[in-house]
Each structure stands twice: as C-alpha cells, then as structure tokens.
Image 1: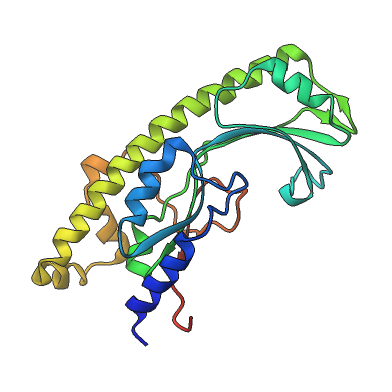
Image 2: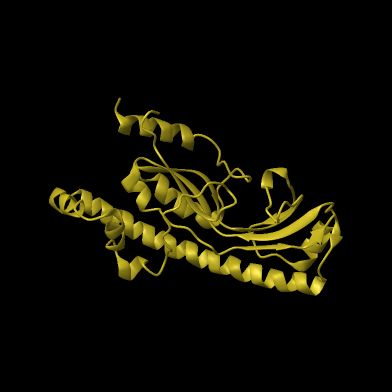
Length: 233
C-alpha cells in the first residue's frame, strides 16, 4: 500500500471533521498556524487551543485534576476579570481550580522526521486551588492578584505563538530546500536527529522554542502533541 496516498486519505478524513477541542473550532489566534501545518502534505491538525483561563470544579486526588470528571465553571480565551471568577465560584460545590493553559496543538505526522520539527513543549502554565468543598479558601484580593498573573501569561502566550509560527515557517521552508537537493539530504543523514534539529537555524529559532523529546499524552499538557502515521494503518 502506498503510505503517502494512505496518509493523504487519512488527512482528508481528519480535516473533514470538526476540531476535536472542547470548543469544536479553531481559535482566532492560531488560525494561521493551523493553516500553515494543514497546508503541508506531511501534517494535519486534530485539536487546538490558542490558550485559555479556566475555572474547574471537581474532586481532587492529590491535587491532580481530571478534566473529564470536572464541571467547567468558566472558560475564556481572552483576559479575565475578578467579577467573572467570583460569580462562577458561587456555582462551585467541590474543589475549584483556577488554571491558565498556553497553546495546545495536536498534530498527526506522516513520519518521524516530520514529527521532529514539532518536538517542543511549553511549561508556561498556572494552576491554583481556590475553594474546598464549595468553600472559598482565598480572599478576593488574592483572586485579583492571580488573574493579573494569568492575564500576563495570556499576553506572553500570544507573543510565543507568533514567534513559534515564524520559526516553524522558516524550518519548513528550509526542509523544502533540503529535500530539493538530494546530495545535501544524504549528508544530513550522517548526523544524529538532535544535531540535525539544532542546525536548522539556531540564530532564528533557538530562542523561540524549548525542545523536549517527550511526546505529550493528553489535553492537560500544554504544548504540541505529535502522532506519527502508523505503519499498519
């Protein structure tokens, strides 16, 4: 079976469906990034989030929140104000958690070398418990302080998305040039995958993204999750 043709068919099926995120559509701040990836034959996105501030209500086991068992009291992709959080907290019956989550992007990749370009992860997050068994455990002044931090992270997240988009665009363009020169491609194969990634453009991209070889496992982890097209699909 032609794996390229099969991946193309799989991609067409994936893009014909709605975004698998809770919202069900692509956020405005990552539209260009999603279009950039989906415009390349070796990628397609399945789920995305540009970044959000959320208030969850649910049971906590060792302060590890499982979203599927929680009630979403508040979610916004814009800066958040204290009054909105206070109103939402009145609906809490369990242990409410305020979270900021940066860019989340799940991408299907045709093969390993395609996935290596996207092997990044961000730790630009925030997670703070606010109530226990429906009882508010912090002051409104502290909530206002937390929201200032969360909103600052939201603004920084937008800047990081833009930098990542520029770095990814450069890396993909360089990949295209490399693939069009077989001799250079053969030479590159003599280097390790890590060395190959470092040499893409350290001046342009080295400061933009933090590499991490660990693949993200679920929507709770901020960053980019890549899945390689399976051999036996």
